[in-house]
Length: 181
Image 1 (spheres, rainbow, N blue to C red):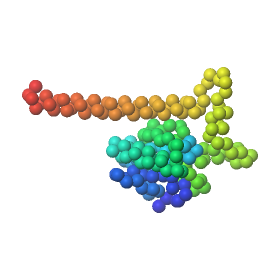
Image 2: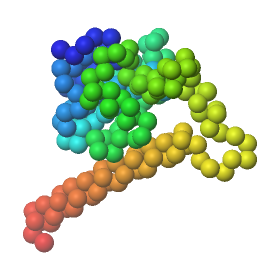
Image 3: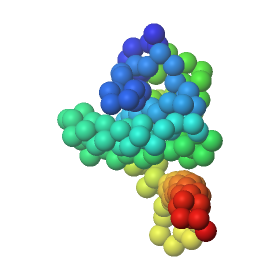
Image 4: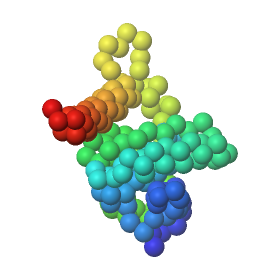
């Protein structure tokens, strides 16, 4: 079993149930909910071979988690294996490195050496505000990350449309075969 504390913010979708503190994570067949307290976001990580039903159930579970007091006003985002946004990388690395020193996923994002050395602690809103200044035409990291998320979502939608179109084409061919065309 993985360590408690940090892993109390990680869930695995198992059919129609949600399992807290899964035995393993990032299984290509699996779907996981990872609560990112810093970004007030529930990541729904879907493996490359995960089932659509599990992704659907994960979105339902994320909606239910959002109604709980400690996750109130959190948003959720579905991300696919291999096309994770930049904001997810710290969590991915924390889990791969089994960071037992952290209390929750994403905490390392703001625990840099310089902030530890000088005793500085920044909130995500302070960091985002410092990146955006009037007259600044360059996009902030926050906006770039949001654009990447949207593009990832569009890419996933395109994959679903392609799959649906291929499936419809096969079904039409089957109908034509049945009527003798």
